[in-house]
Length: 530
Image (cartoon, rainbow, N blue to C red; front, side):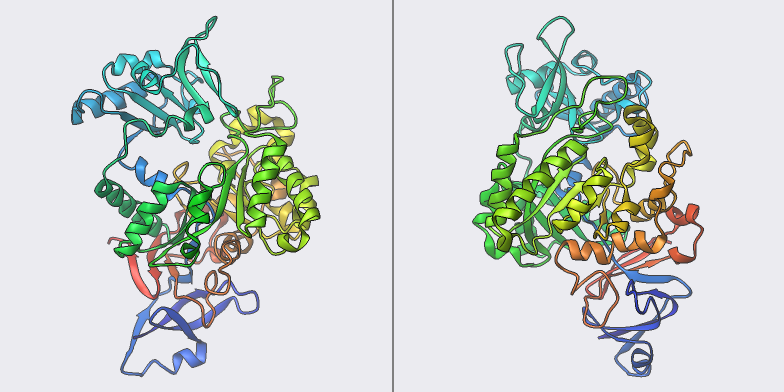
């Protein structure tokens, strides 16, 4: 079957031929452009797709998110709109009233942000104990790096006054004592994730199916599970085997705790019904809005630089293992000290193993406070910064308070990365934020905070440069630039249709552009409801 796309703005993301008049697709591949494509118009087996002035371009590629974690949040109590402790309490109580969970069932809320609460603080177990006594309850911060639990949850985890803070994390304490106050930070939170038992397979599959539909609604046809452990791999493999996946999903395995998932499944590195393993993931620090990103200089008004997850020696051993296995590594670095640890250890490994290091394309995930002096060293390593640039809009005003003017102005320094000839990508770290590429593109271009402050004027980029981050550059990050990321003959027919051409839209209106349809392997898999 052939489909001819015409009568619209066909944006290729190819530098030497950015626009086409028509595009011909056969089955799952692009087979012709312009005159050669147009020649097929009268063939009896050609379907004409009239774009009616809409914009066709390569489908968006998610450079970093957590689709399995996102799926699990879809059926939790949503707290992103909460603006006070009272709002949190009301939302959790409404859930209990409406669902009447049995005694001892874990109740989960997701998405509160202390920065936007009237109290400007994290809740404690005291608040959650007012809501539930018999049911363990936990509410997770929007960043995914911290949470608050009630007394029943802490008891189920065995967390007491005698519990020692783990490396790379800490427990909140009631003032003047060692009694836990319910706050769990970084590794102290991550270690509690298994409480409540494993959900049923059918529930997991339903949630992941919902999640992939959300990605498709934002024009994304390649997504990521960016912190994969054995259960995630098993679930996605099972969904792939039963052909329940509509989008390509690439899993990056937890290098610290689950390396065997990749080591024992080398055959899974090739797509099988839309799922494959891509390499390893490592987390070196926390989040800047939560003041757990590891900085070289203290947060404003304090002497606190936060902390790293691991020692230099341990990070070196983990990264060296990945390079020796010839596996790509994605490394979470929000703070410049974490970035320094990653860069320094990779420089040592490159010096020791130059041939193995060649062509590895290591990725610095977030790179939010990476310094300008670090960018040339990243270039020398072939390192790709994947910027969480939407932070400028969502938390830019918070960063001004936490980091001060100079550092906040440089957050997500995309233009500087381009000046240093770095390949760069964008992401939303979903479920931290929805995988909204148009909103991210607008922020990269305008760099306006939620309160309208221009944050880092010199780091603004063009619309074309922003689009590259979520198309051809993201394909390069995945080693898939020969199959995806632009509309070129021989590439996969993964495409998105937008209501307007971003290159011809006012910069402050880009986020309002609608996703009209998403096409995967030549088939329409999402269409906007009329």
